[in-house]
Image (tube, rainbow, N blue to C red):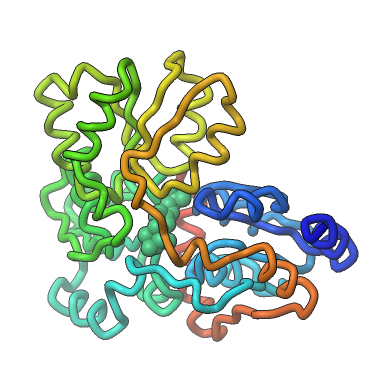
Length: 311
Ligand code: 13P
Ligand code: SF4
């Protein structure tokens, strides 16, 4: 079986396989660790293995290459990109910074290494609020590139001097509150788990703040936050507003509970480019290596290390 061959090869070549929560089930099954962006960066930082095979999208593998300059980092398909990370380029960021001299630039981990090299702080969905809270009140903040995560953070922190880049992830932007309402109507007593990249996050927060979201418990959190919450919650049914790949692991870890996607169309085609065949070929031929030029990596590492220091 292909999965067995992968497991043998991984041992023989001293490789650790890291997989994001949105990966195909069969890819998650051969991974040493499955998790969110922050958790996987942490695993990369402490792995004793000489090669990291990253089953996720390109910016995630780049982040691992920046954190671990002495390791070989492989991605099974170089075309596995991210619409959110494509929503800002280096020139745009530089000119935005010029318009706000003295501002602190905070960028989501879903950005290229070049963009990270121009950031003061990097963050993920699980620590974005704490990263912004750590910045002195009197400093302006430039938050990029996700506008929905940005407005969520601005609301939670109450920050007024925060400017938000108008980028989005096409998968999460496509999850509409009408779809969520329909699912909640269909699944009585279900709790709602929402990723802050969703376009409906602000509306949901408003509805919760005014006291009612169809009488449901609502949690807005990163993919790993959702995993942890689902495990400890007393509820039996959950509507999950994020990429559908997460349902596999949720269901596996909580067989007595039931999980439905807020939208069946919330599928990231980039994440799904990583197939078991490609994982095998990647291990066998040690391709495709992700390298970040040293001057960019050295600058980007500062922002990433600040992210890793704040949880
Ligand atoms: P997490 O950091 O919550 O894993 O999200 C990463 C991502 O790409 C969301 O689309
Ligand atoms: Fe990027 Fe969206 Fe895919 Fe996450 S789900 S990797 S943000 S395109």
